Length: 437
Image (tube, rainbow, N blue to C red; front, side):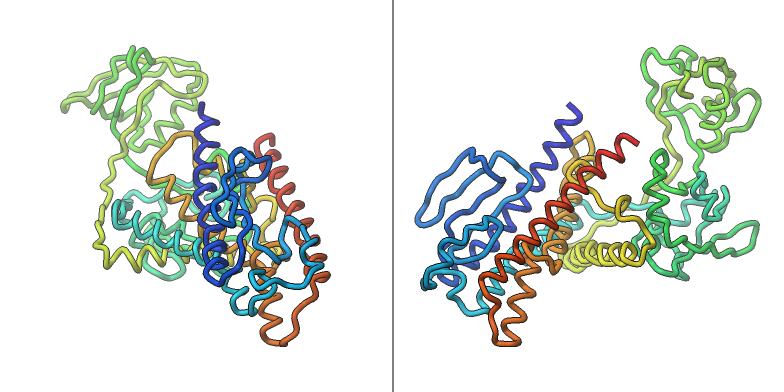
């Protein structure tokens, strides 16, 4: 069931985005009087098709993609028979270069608009919830990767790249993770220390599968929901209890409690619990996984901010374009050899995992908005068979006044298709490799 939820979200998100992308091509083509033969969501074999006017609207069985077939255009269908005849007035090749350029940009523009609208809507509807940096008064917990970078448990992060930290989440910002000379400033034992971000940090994060990030807030906690029939329930642990000691060892923070359980896997422990201003001793059996069966509640005050529509518009727009900026920086790191392509690129399996195995409207639309901007960015790459490849050839034609031959465009399309199929195969293999290893 979990897999179906992940796959279902991926298909729904891509169907929306691909449908809108191809709609951008179709509407601009029709606007300039070009004949659109097919509008398809998904690839053949055909599940459903209906012809309305000159256009057949089709739903394909393979859901990861779509296409628009415009008369007189060299496209992925490689149907070039009609190109041997003289151009007809309604054909793509018969139209001025500037009109053809707008048609090729139509899908990209629609995806950009879609991404912006989604982020504006999310900002206006949900506002923003974040952890104020001042709330992380006990500093951070550094895991193995954090310690490798130079963090120590108890460090207080005060600045990122010299800018005062206002929201704790900003330590995860793309400026921090993808910048060429990024650094964190931490307060440690009353002294300020700068920690340089390694250029290969994204690779290290990709390898760090068992940890959410390299540092997390160091937080006191209380007992939340106790799992029925669990060791915690049998021991008499109750919601709102405060666990202060395990086997006589202080556990003020949750990471300390986790460490105590890890040390006592499969053993009995004695917990000192504060309940209604009294201390109670409870005995519990720790599982082999290092748990006793309750939901911790971190003692942390989140800040919430609501935005008017006037405020949400620039903020949502900035969030949308930050996705493209992050992709540009990411590609730059790949080309400079600072990060590995195999660890940075994800195929359909990896994207489905990002959606997760539970459905949440906010998360779904956040990821869909991000994918819309990524789809626009990827389609703008100057690769034949992508919109960006067509844009390059059309720009050349407009500047030089010379149109590339149909034979050249056909061969370029073939090369582009080989590149794209190879990239897709690499991405899928890479996804499977990550799961197995």
